[in-house]
Image (cartoon, rainbow, N blue to C red; front, side, top):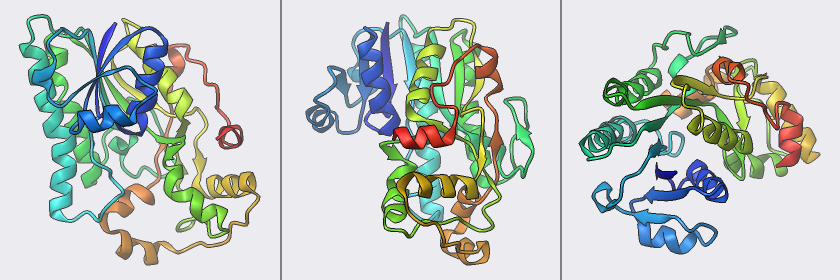
Amino acid sequence: MRILITGGSGFLGQALAKDLQQHGHDVVILSRQPEQQARRATDTAALWVGSLDDIKEPVEAVVNLTGANLFALPWTEGRKATLWQSRVTLTEQLVAWMLKQPVPPHTLLSGSAIGFYGDAGDQPLTEDSPVGSDWAASMVAAWERATEPAAQAGIRTLNLRTGLVLGNGGLLKPLLPLFKAGLGGSLGNGQFWYSWIHLDDWVAAVVALLGTPEAKGPYNLTAPHPVRYREFADTLGATLHRPVWLTPPAWVLKPLLGQRAALMLSSTRALPHNLTTSGFQWQYDNLQEALENL
């Protein structure tokens, strides 16, 4: 299959591109700096392009992973506009391009996030649960709505509601130095839920969904056993043989984080109901085993 990956130079995109090529697929990666990224990615033989107009041959499937980093900067009005444009607007443009092709792709797997559900406390959340009420949830909902024209045109469309991905990068990148230095800890009361997934399982799930013609709609890409953040912090500390003791309270964190606190301190107990029903088998469904592997 010939597959286009947008956002393919990122943490998830690189891992997915490598795996797809190992399975014999041809991969096209859309990047803002295609030549520079191609030089860095010595382990992939993908075709790198800087514009959708540079794609001259039809692609059969699209995996849309575009999106600016949610945690990198404070959520000023300008930053929120950037986050929206990099997800919602670029997805709208991608879908419009797909529909204009002489031979449109037959499948679209588009990025989304469990932030769709907002802060839901201890409530278990499946793909049928309602959208949340905060700004991040509204953005994710708009991100998913941007794919609706593709589905209406008969393109098999899936929304990948991704949880916190554990791998060589992603969530662990900012956490590991702190925990290795013995400065790791819980956040707030530590009782909010973290819905996580190992990078290998995330890639395997996406590849499986690409090859499952009947799969469509939203999929929670998380491990089947979410944990409270206190357990996550304690397990990471134990894996690194480091103490876990710092616990800045929520009233200290919220002014520092601003609206980003809705993501870092909210409780999202997302369960991968649709993935489980499909028969998917996780390699790492236990947090301790996942962290030890990494």
